[in-house]
Length: 217
Image: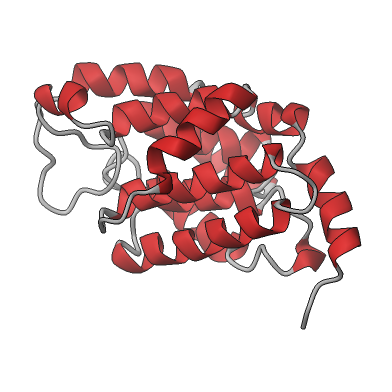
């Protein structure tokens, strides 16, 4: 079913206005702080079976533009600033490799690009983001960082657009990961980010919010 262009673009321009995007990321603990923590945590190889928010050697931070710490810093800045959003998009626009987490951030960059694009290009970028998220998740289905990125985008789009079909499954995975902390593989800062977003935005029941409040970092 084709979605009429005018209603979609009118709604999307509101959803991805600069103010709404900034509000989205203020709800969670600072992604900038998470990026800084990732640099200090570099050097510890992930234990077997752990998932996202683990880091490689310190040299990777400076040698690769796609290191998680760098991508998180770009993401945090892009959420609040149009010029930073453009830089974030350009960094990842030509990425063709198959690192699942990098693709997750590429999808996020495409979604933020929709916020700043002209009225007639917003739909294109949101559809690009949806396809890239699908690729990222298919490569690493249980990665909570990728799911968090997709959830933070899809949960801010009107459901009637048909572009939020993964909200429930992503929320369930994130909730289970947070409740199983520290056994889920999330580091302390990642856990606070996920918990803060789920609870602060009202994405979980009061009962689950109470359970999350009792989970030790």
